[in-house]
Amino acid sequence: MAPRGLKMDASKEVSMYFSDEDYASRVDKGEVFIHFKGTIYVVLCHAVDVSNKRIPEQVIVYTNTDPNDNRVFVRDAREFFSEVDKTKYPDAKQKYRFEVYD
Image (tube, rainbow, N blue to C red; front, side, top):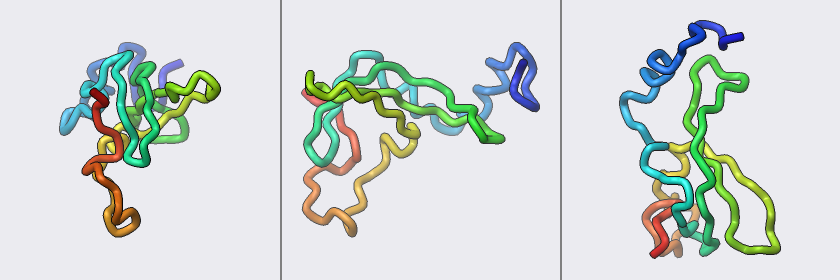
């Protein structure tokens, strides 16, 4: 069953929600990022979260590169690419929460 307000072929309708900025398309599967606190993560995929929301949200699915940490994380794509709050974290060296790791 399609989410309320969306037809079964919802690709065009869902994409209209993201026309202003397609954050998730900025990442590729396997791309490696460093969090501003220093942990390195690899992107597993990007997805659309339709749970308990009237408007679907793009999310980034990623995991820690530490072989002893098998957790998988999901973060709203806009937050993934947001700037670090310098008031809360004045010593942060990165401008963005996640940056591409070279």
